[in-house]
Image (cartoon, rainbow over all chains, first blue to last red; front, side, top):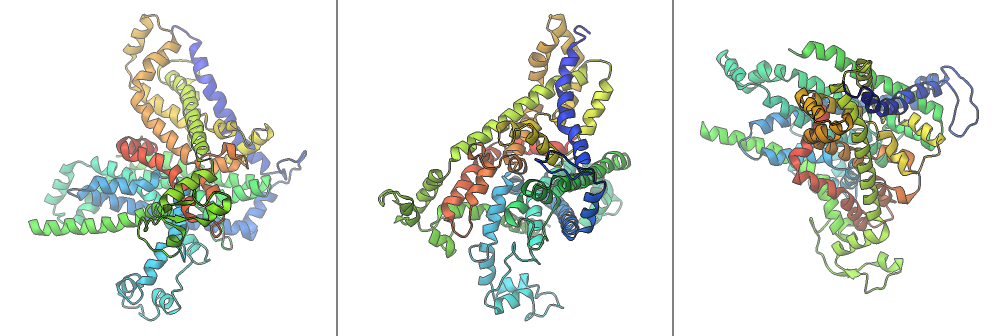
Length: 318
Length: 297
């Protein structure tokens, strides 16, 4: 080694920044969560687990856990499955795959906040094209398909679509209604995330050797579904587990759409954790409760990533 | 057999086209609204671009411009008035300043560290690397609150530093570059040392050029993430318009959804969203590679 001190200069800035920016804040959040400290206060008292006690017992925070869980449980599986379906469809196309790929990837790229506002207008009850599309379809094919009249157990007079048509075009105010807001936000989340998963799956699909499909065919797996079950799905195992964890971690961090569209409402049905941290700690200056939410949040993420890194990676790699 | 295959192909396209329409809906809405007049927007008429009739815009007259100035086609008015109302170039410039500063500092910190971890042998190397691996687990947005408290105590809220500092360390960048440097042959470095190059010169004159492809992917990853980031700027910039990044600008344009004119508002949103989308369409492959970088191992 020529210059034996060089490495110190090389690693020192990185180490110092890692400690100050990434590691110390973990302890700081942990510390603050056991106090009643609010930003701007000169002193603080230790209050033990009081903040955590509030978090698990007060209605607001229970709703927060529910909203976050609902969002994650809905968005992750659907965006992963859609990503897989899109990737398989594109992979089997003879032409045009690149165009679809570009289109489906656009939402991943575009500034989410801008797109959230665009969705707000698209779904607006009087200005949006979604509700006008629905209103113009009353009594037609659109009503038949989207009102699920084709399902034998749906009464064509009683479906949600027929009822809205009958009541002077009373279609939902998607983002402002208690029973639709969370699902609408989930939909935007899925819309944004599935293109990312699609690209990862496309990469996964190209790495499956062609011979495996020929071998499967010789073994009698003739239909597409059988080949999928026998070859594609197991071979995509590592990709799937990776896609699921990374999507889960990103989904947990949802903030932009909530802040601009619902502000956690109506009646806290979309009150997700990142928004709660922002609202409590920054807007209401309740730093300590914000810190407690932060600790729980980080806990979730760390557990998930550990799970991916040490349990799954060992099991799934062949 | 042939005919059957064509039908299959047709079905796939039908499904994908429906998907594409749903995906494109908000983009369509955004562009369409930025071109049409207020009446056309409110009556949902005029298709994508509207009738584009030359007219006098009352809001513009009320703001204090002469009637002559305020008479033009809706698309001209929307974009012109958007720039009159808000310092859009300033927001875009802030976006450039912040994303570029972040990227440059990230590289200045990560590259030497990655080189040391990959190619130098020293006491504690394994420990430093495991520290990097541990830090990879920490989501920076998750620790935003303690970071905010620290910045507030240091009096840095509402400054460029607040926007940039938390992102100066990219453990992911270190990890990525280290993996890349591992593949660079030792002979190259030894030859450089024989030529009398110091370790600093090796990092910047030998390692940096070999790392260009990886660095480019990382640049896209970093720039896209921070250009689009809304959460962090929203935390640390409270009111100072001079520091607004594009997403904060977007939030401001939105203003009161019921009171404002929608055309100029959407025109501003389109203006700040478009640069990245155009860049993406031009260099698609690189972008997809860069953004899914976290997905590669």
